[in-house]
Amino acid sequence: MKRIPAGIWAYLIVLFNFGFSHAWMSAINRANLQAVFYWIFIVVAIGLILFARKRHPSQDAALGGLAGLFCWAAFGEAGQAGELYTQPAIWGVVLMLTIFLALRPGSRCDFHLLIHKALGLYKKPTGDHWYAPGTALAFFWTVWLGHMAELTAYYDPRFGVHSWLTTAILIASLFATPFLLIYLWKTEKWALAWGRAIPSVLISWMWVEIFMKWGVIPKPW
Image 1 (cartoon, one colour):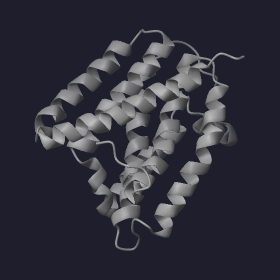
Image 2 (cartoon, one colour; image 1 turned 180 degrees about the horizontal axis):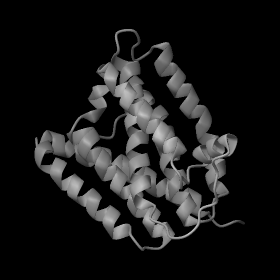
Image 3 (spheres, rainbow, N blue to C red; image 1 turned 90 degrees about the horizontal axis):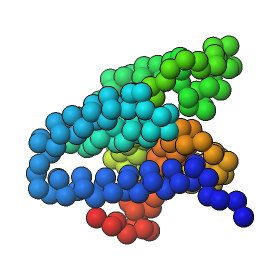
Image 4 (cartoon, one colour; image 1 turned 180 degrees about the vertical axis):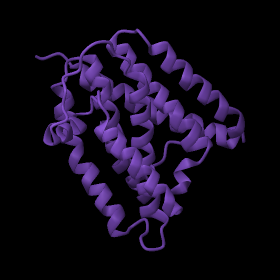
């Protein structure tokens, strides 16, 4: 029997940390300590990114993902960046960041690499690595985009919790999850595993969150 590959382990670890972060953010909000932890999370995130420099690629990528989680906790949760979905201009910022992440040299995202190859931009990575800054930024961007998309589906007057947009997000994320897990099952290297597990968890978390919103799954916090 094949041993559990790095991709699945990374997925489970990221999923646990993502769920756990919701629990401790709820505790921070109840204690009204968002302003204090905003700066604590920023310092921790920067420290993790700097600490990742010169580490083994797998450790570098893992620390970058953890830094991204703290960036989201600071800017997205404590700083309420997710609530900016009501401002039309913020979608322009998201678009520019999306273009940068998709086309930046050295991206290790499988989807971005497909775009690079289609546009003739692909170059095989060479030399030194420092994955943490890019991984942290990609983590924050992915959560931010998914969060604003869900809030738009829930609360925009044109849609609603049971609207077609919410249902479309549910179906798309639910349909993608098994294919992502199969892809992760084939991922043996830890450096790649972290990079693939992070977006996989965030995509699969979307349908979990919608089911919690619908009352199908009880909220654990």
